[in-house]
Picture 1: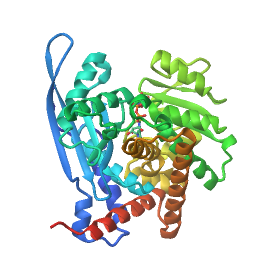
Picture 2: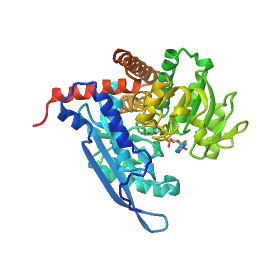
Picture 3: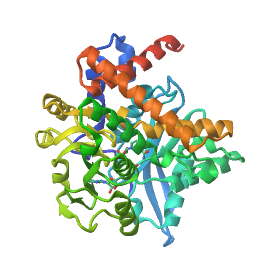
Length: 422
Ligand code: NAD
């Protein structure tokens, strides 16, 4: 199972992240050395570790934890379990976390982790063994003051609970603030499960206003029906929009009259996929992205909208629930065509925002109610959207570049104020 870090994606996310950085940094007066620092990661850990399997054999897995930047605070970022995880992907995701936290103004830096594994091939016990061993391996980087993981693709609240427990066993006392996205019973936050989707909804409603599209007329397409995709779809459905198509790794479904999202959520819980949902037409996964609609919400993986299909995207707004779904050359084509993009570092920042609330609550051992969390999240997402829109209009750039300008400026200024050690 040992694998070298190779660039397996047609699109290398690290190149994408750096190009996005370079485009925005060109608008800012940043010293060359600081710019170089910001376009590189701070520290990178690769771990090759053994896991005892149910049949008594031992398998070796490879995982990563990368800190991109910690100038504004402890580094924060999810852990992904996927067969396509590479060091370059983790680097990109860590950098995006830095800009995301700075875009919404929360006092964290950026990190990310990943393990090369398809968790669906593991038993529950093997998944627990793998998680606990990986958590031990990266514990040299992890702490409530230093680096706080969270869920990402194919990881969930149970996996966060095992990470919290493993770290706590090493310490000899409970340390809930070491990880976010935990179950409520052990210091998780109300609202965390829906937080990313709620942020997608808040920013999408803002974008609909900018584009003068009434929410009741809005037709929405969602790629990915996991944590982010399903919550985004459900909350947009509750807000009165029509979700006309949804896809996951197994396939896609369409009904131009709109899907009953609560029933679809039950169907996915029962069957594991959106495929086969009654009164829908199966459609091709790639064709899903090209449907005529008002809002396309990519909520699966990076590199989905590229030069190869950007001409065929027929959405008026793209709300990036996923990290890195659009490449820079696709951005140019979409911008030219007048498609409004809510960039990932703004659109999906609701998750890290409520993770921040969870961390604050754990440190204080004082917990907030649902209303308080949703209200504070709504305020942060709305304010951030409007601030980025202001930069977009002032500088005459697209929304992504505007968000990056704001985020990079914050981190660069903080770096200069702190000074270069020693
Ligand atoms: P998840 O594992 O819960 O769900 C992923 C979904 O994408 C699944 O429905 C899966 O079937 C689908 N999918 C995977 N590969 C696909 C493919 N090739 N084509 C179509 N669908 C595919 O993951 P998640 O936590 O919802 O994360 C989704 C995206 O959102 C990722 O880019 C992640 O980094 C980003 N994100 C997640 C959070 C969070 O709080 N979980 C926060 C911010 C951003």
